[in-house]
Every structure is written in structure tokens, then in C-alpha cells.
Length: 320
Image 1: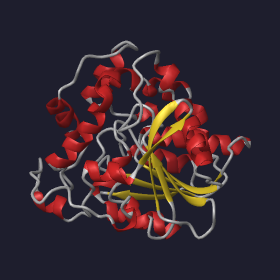
Image 2 (image 1 turned 180 degrees about the vertical axis):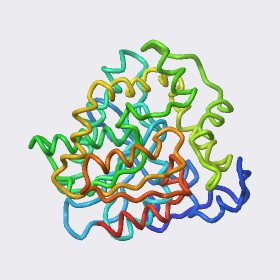
Image 3 (image 1 turned 90 degrees about the horizontal axis):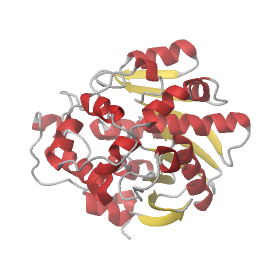
Image 4 (image 1 turned 120 degrees about the vertical axis):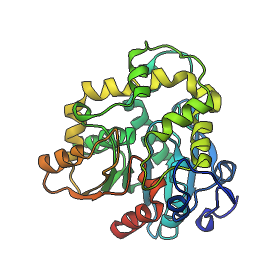
């Protein structure tokens, strides 16, 4: 396996962005999908085949950075961040059940496989297998709720490892303030059953709506993200997965408390151009818990780790 710590790979020599080339070219290049896959491995966790990338070495055994990706993304979204953080410490990031290269069960219901509680259970299992005892938890989008469940478990004394610092990126845990995109509205209206096949072109178009003009997504970026969704017929479980929005509403108080009552520092970084997890959510978090370290990024949209991976890596390392 190649050394991930020195891997900063160009997506391609020439990519055609949906917006300007300049903004895309200024970022650290993300890994090509196959190169990212080559850095990882598959493990068995809670009955699922899970894709996992680990990189770097911590000065203290059992310590590291544990990353929880968002919806409908995957670990690949962080491929420009992980190599930089791994120069300092260990990084662990799996694809959650139903995402990226991991298993995407098509039987059963949302509760059977895709519940945010089950995703939190998965992170506990991964942490145990990887020997993590104390972590910086980095969470984004849907992962914000999965992470807040882990933070709540720590408050309750049931989490088998320690979260010493949480870094929170754009996410709609405060579901009452969310601004859903047409794709999300359509999915939520559908029943908890397998959906029809989705074309790559449609997926790329829908994903593009979540990026901003300051850092437009290249076609290569959108293509890789779409391929991660389409892997193992993941497009067919979209309607089932997105029911996490309904679960967020049901457990709003629990996951809200997970962050505002966390017994450790919380640093929050919010892309102001996010069309879904709108910036007023960041203000609401700060109002509820003034101790939160809040920074707003006016040039960033929903995907900070893709828009500005160097900046994201720096805020992690500055607080590690």
C-alpha cells in the first residue's frame, strides 16, 4: 500500500469545471477514486463490509482523528485533507453503511440498516477495531448528527472511547432550519422502499447544486462523487437513506444536546454559501451555546473539505 501521508494526487491533468477553472485549480488536488481505494482496505464491522482508510501515526498510542463524512458523500470527500493531517497524527475514516465502497443493503428498512444510531454504532466498532481510545472527532453534514450521537453517549458515560475535541462543519442537525433541495424533497416524499435507477448525469447535476460559485466543482469531482453513490446500486437506496432527515426531527432534542452540552471544546466552521445547511444554523448553535468557537467562511458552500481542503486541514491541525 502506498504511503497516504505523501499522497496529494491530481484528479486529472485537465478538468472541465461547471464554473471557473481558477478556483478549482487553487485547491490541493483530491485523489483519483481508484488511488483513494488503493489506500484503504475492507473490514467486517457489525455484520457489514466496510471500506476504511487509515493514515499516519499518533505520538500517543490510541490517539488520532476520527472523521464522520456526510450525505450523500463518502470518505473520498476528505482525500485532500487526510494526507495533510496524517503528517502529524493518525487519521481514521470509514465509508458509512450505504455510502462509497461500503455495503449498501437493499433489504429491510431504514431502521434496519441506515439509522443514525446504527451509523454511530459502526463508528464505535471501527474505533474498537482500530484501537482508538481518545480522538478529535471531525463531523460534517449527516455526520454532524452521527457525531452528536457519539458526543451524547460520552455525556451519558457509555462511549467506549474519549472525544477530547469536536470539530463541526456544515450540517442540518437543526432540522427545523433546513432548506431542502428539490432532490431531497423528492426523496423524502417517497416511501421507505427501493427507488428507481438514477442516471449519473442527473446525480452530477443535483450534486452541483450544493457547490458555490467561489469554489465550483469540476466535472471530475462530480463524476467521482456520483460514482461513489452508484457503487453497489447505491442510487436505489437513496430514498431509504434520506429518511435520516425524518429521524433528525424525531431526535432533535437529543442531538442538539449532544453538541451544546458536550463536555469538551467544540469548534464550528460554516460555509456561508451552503444552500441547504444555511448559515443561520451556525448562528443558532452559537446562541444556544456561546462557548462554541464559531468561524464563518463567506467563500465556502456545503463541502468545505472539497472547496478548501488546505484550510480544513489547518483548522484540524491547529486544534489537535
